[in-house]
Image (cartoon, rainbow, N blue to C red; front, side, top):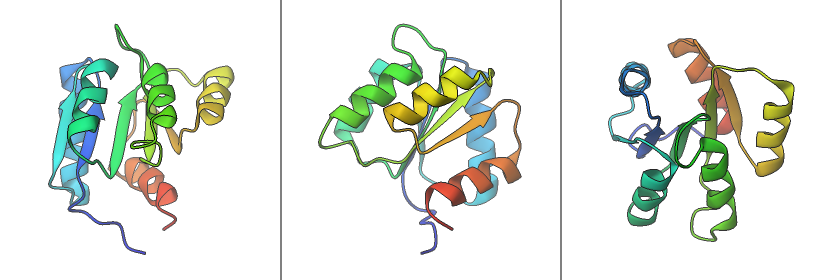
Length: 127
């Protein structure tokens, strides 16, 4: 099954530069419908208003972290199936394990490029 490049993607990061970088990488990969949120709380609000095909979220944010957002999404029947990729600067094993247990679909460690992002997205969608 080919990835639907028209599906809405939500980037969640409190760092505007990171949002811009991920948005540009997604555009390079052919995604056209990309929204962003500055933290987990804002992301949840957007996810309850619009159906996203993929969420790419930073781990470290205030007041709601990407990890807390992931747990919220997975316990919400309307959102639970949303593919979720966690982005972090730290490759701590316990974080990876915690995110996996919470239901993350994939994990990216910063810094990364378009090829890495594409391979992670491909893996999520079984390409």
